[in-house]
Length: 156
Image (cartoon, rainbow, N blue to C red; front, top):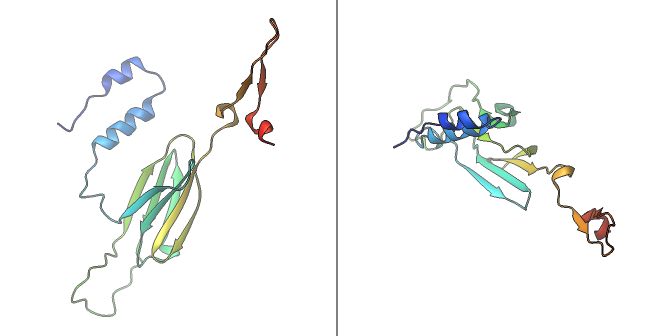
């Protein structure tokens, strides 16, 4: 069973449209159409991630990276050059592609670099100040107000 009905979610939730759309797109995944180009997603540190994509034969001018509405899109379009020779066997794919990655709300693309046929895209989780962990001081005197102590000020 591949199809799911998410309409009950729409009846009882507000503001979760993006989550329901994400669930719908995940259920429509087809491995045959999403195998080129190969890629890795690695967690470099607690809040740092790297997407590495094998783009052998593509130059910087043929690659495009765009972030729009929480979707990272990497596109490769080959120049319309005709090969100068006839291939007896062509194992290196050179076709155009478009790969999309759904980013979480607090994810931000920091940069990209092309080296040795790999495109590396660095993504960072940016935690807003209001959502960072805070340390609450405990007071021993009755009736005294609790004091919020910033964890970063204690470390200094």
